[in-house]
Amino acid sequence: MSASEKNSVKTWIVICLSLFSIVEVYSQCCSPGNPVGGTANLSIVPKQVLRMNTYFRYGYADTYFEGSSKSDFLFVENASYNFLGTILTYGLVGNLNVEVELGYYFNLTQNYDINATKYMLEGSGLRDGVISLKYNFYKNVQKELEFTVGLGAKIPFRKNPQTVNNVELPLDVQSSAMAYGIVAQTFLYKGFIANGLHLFLLNRYENTFENPQEYRYGQALYTSLFVSKALTTHWSLIIQVRDEWRESDQRFGQSVPSSGGNIVFVAPQINYNVLQKWNISVLADIPIFRYYQGTQLSPKYAFSVLLSKEFDFSKKSKSQIK
Image (cartoon, rainbow, N blue to C red; front, top):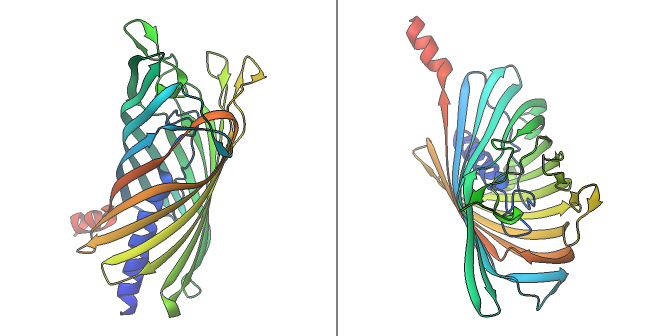
């Protein structure tokens, strides 16, 4: 493989990694108050370049855990969600980028079976947006080493709970936390050209403020380690190990029982590059360790399909000048 091909493979691997890492899963199935995997970390793009990362995700849960053990507790029979998200990253000046995260839940569904009575609750709507500035502090092409930091704000698109038939939906099927917050990120990359390996370490910290209902979701920290291997010019395999920690939520200033905990995922991913323009990924999230405070419904699996592309507006500007 030539040096240009290696650089191309590295670029689209990084893009697909970013897609993989941004998607949020939730420790109580899919509530935005319980994110269990989500970082939007990625190396920056050049000035006047727009990167679009779009993904569709399906998640499912049907088992309760107490601490690190399965529980016989049964309230929600099963829960699932379908989510479409996108991240837009644009090069402003030098090593500085602006990034916007947007997403929409087609459904956040919980099926109940209580005393032989079955019913369903379902929410939908926009997830809270995030706007961040990201700065690349260090990049050495020869050593294949770089470090980027991001800082941003969570912005709710709704401040009041969603209702269906005049009934307020529970938190776990609300698409929004209904509160502002802060997001901090780091991205560290190290490549090894000799054996075709690439390592990525991503961290994301989220702190959501109290919403108008006096509910505050716990602080969360997500740490992801990726190991990628280029198989051919077009194909690449990535294995991710992701640790997701979250403190207990608070309501009216008091700790909420059965909230917070820690989950470790293993996530295999296969990527394909189309004509060095479009990047397509398919991946799965598989939990291998869980520890919950109290008893909580835990994610069983999730699948995602991801698509990414970069648009270079600097070339268009130069051609217009000519």
